[in-house]
Length: 272
Length: 133
Image (tube, rainbow over all chains, first blue to last red; front, side, top):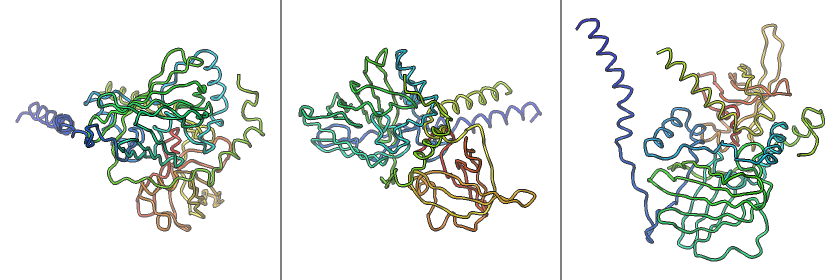
């Protein structure tokens, strides 16, 4: 073999070594989602948002998960995208950013609202029953009981962190309408405020054994210039279990934030 | 090849910027632009929520000792990363801690990795900016 031929050979071998695992991954068909006796996809299982794979398994597994999503035509996650705020709401967001996020309700161990709770890097167990779907979140020991029997939303619902959810099926997609949310939670990042009028429509589609396509569309005309949609893929976590997470136990942030304010490190005037 | 390297670096930069955009309490307390690596002897460990804490005594070349305190994952995440409360990080052990310094407290840090005397390395906290609560 000439030197040039040898180089070409090694170059081809290197390309094959790099691309073979990818090709194998792409050509392996994804296992179909299981179905319930009623014929609907069964969402039951323990799941984490793909963003959390970075913490659970590291950068390589996270990149592989994103690549698998792209190969399967699943949209990329955009849970960090800033909502389309009008000028007034954006000024409020900038105020919270200028305070370094110390107003984050989650940093005070308060229940994380919808949809943010679905992107936290801790697992969620879904239990699908014939007349309701139960969601058990490791973060804050939160739970949601989502009726699917067509009952109307409760008449005495007051605004709350997780609001009232009611579910129905559109084909193979589980659709959840969330109302009665309070205005104390943030949507995703620092200062992503909303009002009590925000309506969230969530769509859960178990499009393979290992994945749920999640989509949350938020409508809140007082602060958004248009509806805002966040997408993420949830991944099945075989062998995982929901563990305890008692956030308030030793949360030093509350005292730190008070200290920062007392020391004049951060703006203290009221939000615009 | 040089171009490819450039784009890989650029891509990584965007990736890190996206993580930083997700920050909440991390950025309130810690500075992702102030990476630290500290080697020292463990003095105490608090296995608590929403973060575990531990302290190490770090000796400078002149022999002066500074006690650094680090904050990291809650126990549920530590266990998932292979930690055990009564085995992994014990007072008296010498460890190397990689993480980021606090903005306001000269001897407080956020831990990302802990390397133990036998060379084992475990994640002790999330990457800068993700919060990880």
